Amino acid sequence: MKLKHLFLINLFVAVPIGLSCVLIPGWAIRLYGMIPDEGKIWVTRLVGGAILGYATLMWFGRKSGSYKTRRAIALALFIQDIVGFAGSLEIQLSGKINFLGWPLNVLTYGLLALGYGYFYFINPGKC
Figure (cartoon, rainbow, N blue to C red):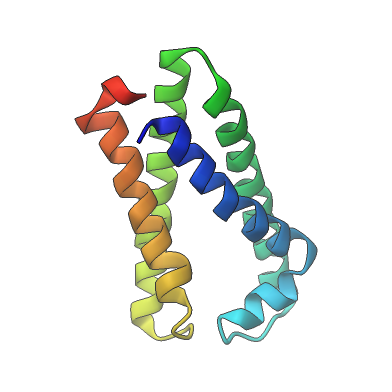
């Protein structure tokens, strides 16, 4: 597998989630068993916008001919996924969201962090 393939996999995960958070934030919040309010809807839309921004990086990064550019994007996504994993694990263990947080957040962020970490730290030649 090459980094561009991980970008593509991540892109197919990020776009639907990002669009859901931006366009139907109340539904996205209810998925986790939470009750939407103005603050949660606002933050969910901000997160959706960030996810769509990362998806844009993945889209253009997968086609980039620059090794340095692909590595920089991989590092940015690694950091984002590590933070997402830690935050998701924290809220999941607190019991404030339902079981869907495990596969949708903790597992997804964890696997993506491992993937980007692999390409950045262990096998940078495949970037």
